[in-house]
Length: 96
Image (tube, rainbow, N blue to C red; front, side, top):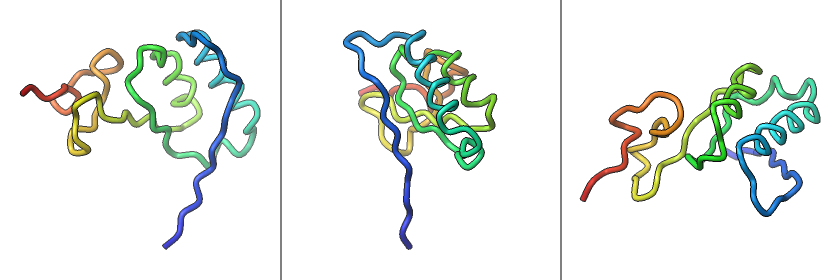
């Protein structure tokens, strides 16, 4: 089975922050227009520059935000970021 995943790139900045990433999210959705409905998931990491505003832009369009693993986490531990959304046992980084 073969899957095709669309990839989008945007303008770069030396110091991205929350407002910048939110603006890029809005720009992406405007560029996609009607094609936004074909996206079901946004997979992102837990970097602080991705705020709840960033997530809200996508969830308002019906896109489910999926958080990647935090540092030192296995694939089985994927869950919400501790700093964003709700913290859960699956979102906590394992201790050694």
